[in-house]
Amino acid sequence: MPGLGSHLDLHNDNDTSSSAYNLLYLLFALATLTYLLARYFESRNRLNYESRSARIISGLIKTTTDLLHTKSDDIKITDYEGQIIAVGPHRTGLVDGAVVASKMEGIPPHVFATDDYDKIPGVRTFLDMFQAITIKSKASKSSDGRSANAEALEKAGQILREKGCLALFPQGNLAKIGQEPHRVYDGAAKLAVKNNAAIRVLRLDGFWSVDNPLIPVFIRNNSIYRALGSFLHMNNVRVTECCVIDFHTKPGSENLSEVEKIEKICMQLYAFYRRPENLTVKQIRAIEKEVVDISDKTHHLIWAKKLKRDGLVKELATLETERAELEKTALTSMNASH
Image (tube, rainbow, N blue to C red; front, side):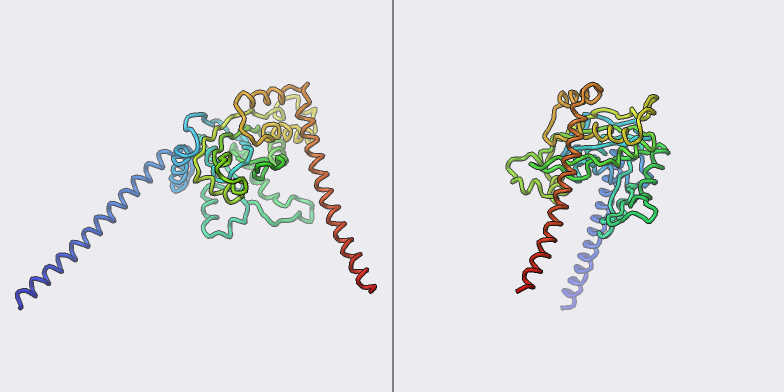
């Protein structure tokens, strides 16, 4: 029937046109929604990144962090130009950095990132967008005795001299449940002393993802869970500004050698970061009072004994390795005599 066939063909054309228009409307709606979300996240950003993509991502991180991990109005970190922001204890990966960044307003901080991340496609571009300083993971000292990452340290020093900001974790490693607290490495102290930069000491407490008793300890101590999984768990992280270490920038500090200044800075940082359990603001203020009081040598002694203990542990490990090699040689000789 010709009439019926023509009617069906017309119907098919209408259906095709309708589907095309529906798809067009859907794409337009998605594009509009994406644009509005991008504008909203950009408005939530508080850091002056040059890249608009960085501003949008920063705003997204702040929005997510304020919803899941911290109170948005507990503290604002401002006026940190030319300073080092030290953060600890280092308990997670993403949450630590996201919480601190969400409190900052002004110039974006520079962070250190190992070149191991270059193995993951797209990560290096992401890190460059956020002005990360690359640290070589498998570098050795040069023939002239320079540090393995001298170039990165020089760049960090230049940033401080140009009134930029560095944010870092002086302990480096994650603080695990039931394990000896990590020592404070002297990198932050050396940068502060050599570039006459003050250190703002921040302490983080309230990681529900780490303290949750319903999650087995072996999971909570897992590095992958700490780095990534903890971001999916709600937290109630409180940021406390412990103190500003700036004695080395003031008149009178000339009486101290560079080594003495570095040691004193490390001691003060370790005093605030050596306890991985949650501390109240009152407890933190008590530590601050003890650290500032030059007549109280308690934290000096704790730091000295920590260094001695770590040295003995390292020496013991070396002795065990040497003993194992000697045992292997003796066993080989004994078997050869048969």
